[in-house]
Image 1 (cartoon, rainbow, N blue to C red):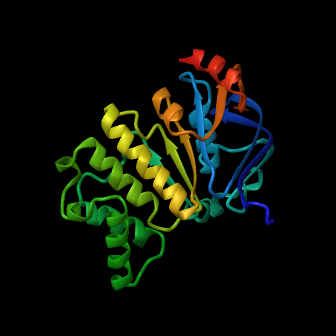
Image 2: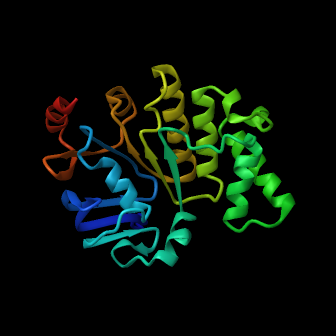
Image 3: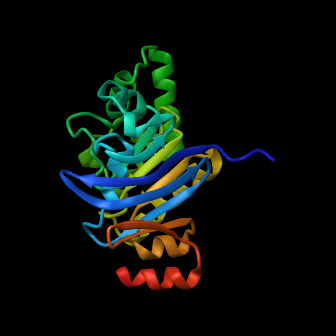
Length: 238
C-alpha cells in the first residue's frame, strides 16, 4: 500500500505573530485528502499558523514545509510560487469590489500566468459551476449575499487546482444555514479532488457535525486531539 502524500509538515516549529511567539513546538502533518480543523480561543495563534503556511509570517525556529516549499528556508522571491500551490479563503471574502465576479476570477488567473483567453474563460466557467454560481458571473460583489460572496471566494481559491485550501474562519460572517452550505462545499472539494483543507473555526457545530482531524490551540501549544474524551474537555475553550 502506498503511503499518502504529505502536503504540510511542521516539526518543533515556533509560530510567531510579529515579534511574539504564540505557538511553541508545533508538530503537524497534513496529507492529501485530509480535512483538518484548528480551534481555540481568540488570540491563541490559529491565524498565525495559517499565515506561516502562506509565507506571510516567517518560520524562524523549527522545520516546516508546504507543497514542496521549505518554510524555514523560504525566500521572498519564492512566495508567489508557493501561493500558486495553495488556495486561501478568508472570513471577509476579500473580493475586489470594483469589478464583477468574472473579472475577479480573471484577475487572479492573469496574475498567476494564464494568457490564453479561451482557456481562461473555460476555467472561470468550470469553477463557477463547481461552487453553484454559474449564473452570477456578471454580478458585482455588492449584489451578492454573504454566502454567495464566500462561494465566489472559494471558486477563486480553486482556480489553479491547489493541493491545499487554507480557510481562515470562512463561516465567521455567515448565519448557520449559510455556513452549513459553505462547509458542505469545502467537504465536497476535499472528497472529490483529494484537496487537503485546513480550516480555522470557532463554530463548534461545524466540527462536531462534519468530522475531521482536530488541532486545539491553548497555552501556547497546538496539538492534535484524537480521544473523544479529550475532545470534550477541549470544547471548554468555547
